[in-house]
Length: 220
Image (cartoon, one colour):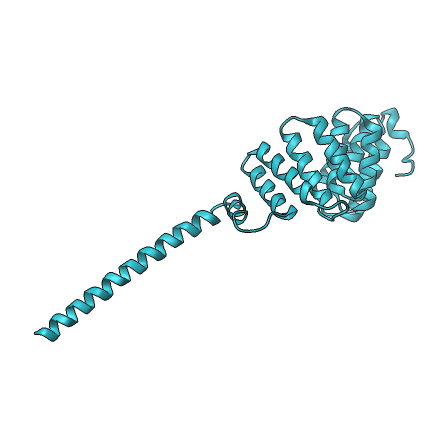
C-alpha cells in the first residue's frame, strides 16, 4: 500500500511538473510571438540588447513606415544617418527612405532635398532619380525631369519607370515621335513588359496627323 501511495505521489509530482513546464513554454512562446509579430516589434526588441547601428535604425524606420508611423520613421532614419559614415554604401538608401517618408507627410521640399542627397552620394541610384524625376514632372519641370529619367535609364536600363517618365516629358511637349522612340527602346530591353506595351499603344493611338508626330526622334 505504501508503495502504491509513493507511486501515486510520484505520478502527481511528474504531472504537476509537466504542467509547469508546459505553462512556462507557453508563456515563452507567447512572448516570442509578440516579438516576432511584426518587423516593428522585432527591431524594437533588438534595440534593447544590440548596439545601435545605421542598418538597425534603417530597418526600424522601414518598419515604422510600413505601420504608417511616418514621423517615427523620419526620426529613425535621422538616427541612422547620424550613425552612418560619410561615403558609406547605406547612405543613398537612407536619404531615399527619408525622402519617401517626407513625401508621404506632404513635406515635399524636404523630400526633394533628401533625394538630391541620395543622388549626390550615388549618381546612379536610380530609385531616387526616378522619384525626383516624377516630382519634377508633376510640377511641369520637364527639362530637369527628362534629365533625371535619362540618367536613370542609362544607369539602370531595366527601370521601366525611366522609359515611361521620359516618354511623358516628350508627350508634354507634344513630341510624339520622340515619346514613341523612347518606349520602343524600352521594349527592346523588356519586350514583354505590359506597362511599356500599354504606353506605346497609347502613344500610337494619338492623332497621327498631329504636327508633333512628324518630328524626328532626335537622340533618343
